[in-house]
Amino acid sequence: MIRLSVNVNKVATLRNSRGGAEPRVLDAVEVCLAAGVTGITVHPRADQRHITPADVREIAERLRPVRPAVEFNLEGDPRPDFIEMVHAVRPAQCTLVPVIPGEITSQAGWTRGPDTDRLPAVIAAMQAAGIRVSLFIDATDEAVVLASDVGADRVELYTEPFARAFEQGPANAERSFATYTAAAERAHALGLGINAGHDLDLANLVLFRTLPHLDEVSIGHALMSRALFVGLDTVVREYLAALGAG
Image (cartoon, rainbow, N blue to C red; front, side, top):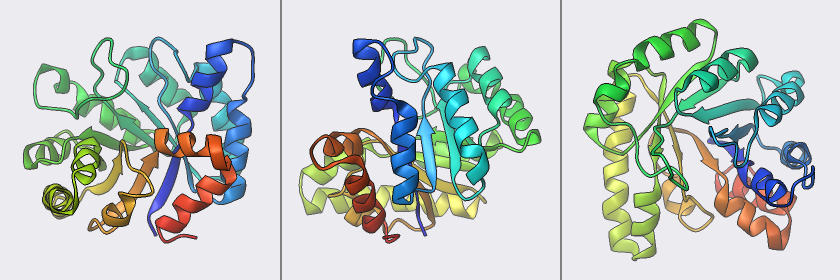
């Protein structure tokens, strides 16, 4: 079964746009749990424009009684305060994501260079604490090999290029999907698990769910956008059904 991890960042974005506590991120987590999800994802950024450290602690505490059936996935760049947060709450999984200053959302995966030199030590320390580590990468052979070299347990394939190709019709979608299939096969051969995320939705999941060895998808923006019109419980169940879990 492909695990669905719901990213609840956008609930915090809406809350922060007005101030105060509404809508409550924990309320969204409760709806997701009741609908049957097996993962919750958050990406606490340094500017705290959506998820805050307090949110991270509250979600971790709420999910503690339902672990390991439901996993908590913390995404972020390996800055000191984020690393400290990961070790404090000990999520099931940490997804390390490169961050470009000023970006609205993630734009690319890790590439080999000075920024990746310290990843092996960061990853080893998390693994020693019982935390699975995934590396956010583009669907290339070079990036897969990098993830293996730095000691990651999994890769998270950056799927926006696939989503854009899917919008251009079946032929483009199949060509793009072939690159993801090659990356997934390479990752599997190197002993890495395979996650995926970014701009996946109910339409393109019909194809992407067939990716070989796919363990987990993390979905936030498309899911929360549809939830505005049909309700969070309904849309979570739609995504679970699309992944074959409903």
